[in-house]
Length: 226
Image 1 (cartoon, one colour):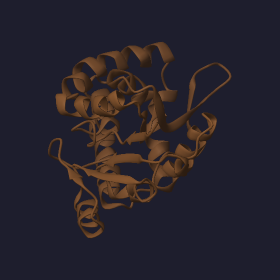
Image 2 (tube, one colour; image 1 turned 120 degrees about the vertical axis):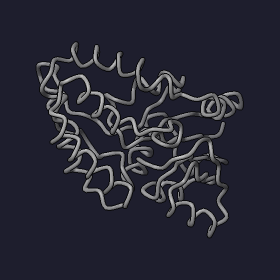
Image 3 (cartoon, rainbow, N blue to C red; image 1 turned 45 degrees about the horizontal axis):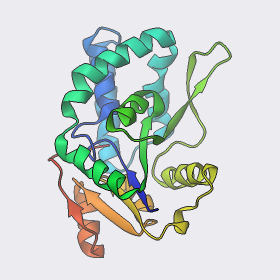
Image 4 (cartoon, rainbow, N blue to C red; image 1 turned 180 degrees about the vertical axis):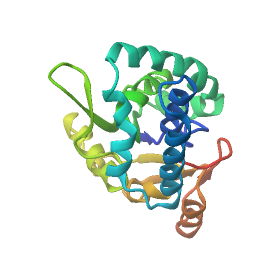
């Protein structure tokens, strides 16, 4: 059995699910549009530039989850999936996942985006395992608005992937072949750890790195992002 890891935003999806979730909440009137979108855009630009303060971003991004009951959040997310995500799950992305599934590879979605946003997306792709930024849940079962554990970001993706594999009795270097598909310069640390790094719809920095190191470049669609 081999291992296939997939980043999500601008890798399997041609959009940024985290960014679009915030925009969805603005459109539906849950969040103040002008102020929230200004901050959302700022964090998004910092991510693209490789300068994002992940803890500051998570405080901002997770705060709305603490302000509403879980049932309400889940209802909003179902609408978000129907209106925003499902129309953008493209055949070529599904085909990439299915190619590895048909080989019998162990599949996981490995993303910096939080687990609330991404768990239904992983299910939509039929990917059983999700390595995402965790969210703290209080004694009352509601989200606290704080991250839980190590964010799945940059080197944190290596740590979180190692934890997940260990829970299954595996180690990253124990696979004869391991793939990681990503678009982002922020994922170079994990790309360096697999046997088969694949720059997928890469940003400029990752594209240059891939050319320098002889990594394959795959373009499922245009665009760059988280």
